[in-house]
Image 1 (cartoon, helix red, strand yellow):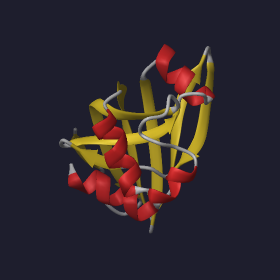
Image 2 (cartoon, one colour):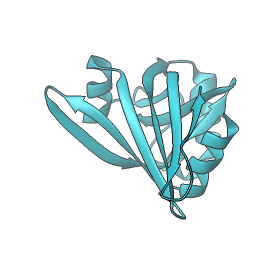
Image 3 (tube, helix red, strand yellow):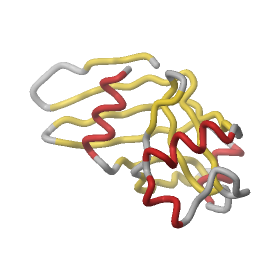
Image 4 (spheres, one colour):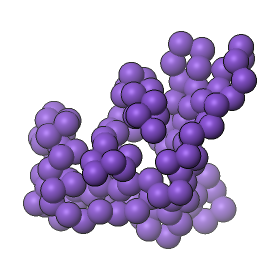
Length: 130
């Protein structure tokens, strides 16, 4: 599981796919954190992506680095605890200009039932269950 976190951290940017009705939506993200042995991401509740996840928590993210890519699919679960939000924001202090663990906008979500697949053009795929 640490391999997934390390890969995403090294990439810096990954792309998160959600669904809005019958339309796929993809956008770049950069936050990833481990808290209580779960893989978390962060966003603002006012964003469309948050509303899409509320309606359908199934997502997939993709990241690419040095000829290898990672696809992580699963369900995102909101964690409203201040401790989880604080841990994320402590890992990304530059986000504190926009977010605070005590505001009504910051949300952190963790992957449940996640499956990560590492792929490349030169090696067989490797699957990791979260």
